[in-house]
Length: 76
Image 1 (cartoon, rainbow, N blue to C red):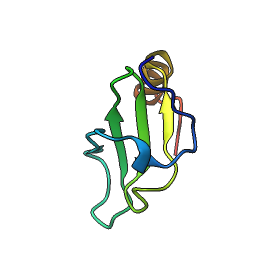
Image 2: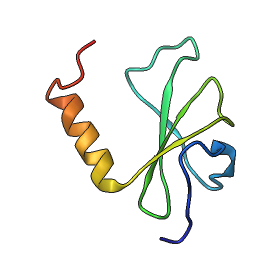
Image 3: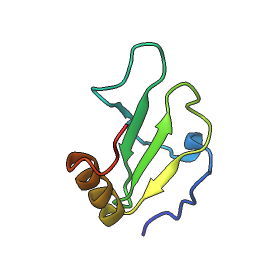
Image 4: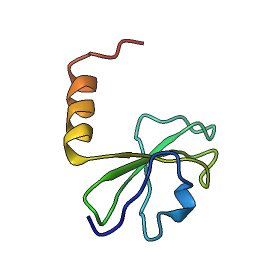
């Protein structure tokens, strides 16, 4: 890994991250944003608080999460 990030660190420390909003996010500022990091990991943050804590996932963790969402593993 080029950099070592820890979950809960400020998203502002993820220099160069290009954040994208989910197409399912609302327009009221309550959005989930994701960024692919140079290390290959995926960062997730709350758009209302862009400098607050980010969650960092390995590629395998992110793939498992996305597959779980797609298969309905996380009902509302």
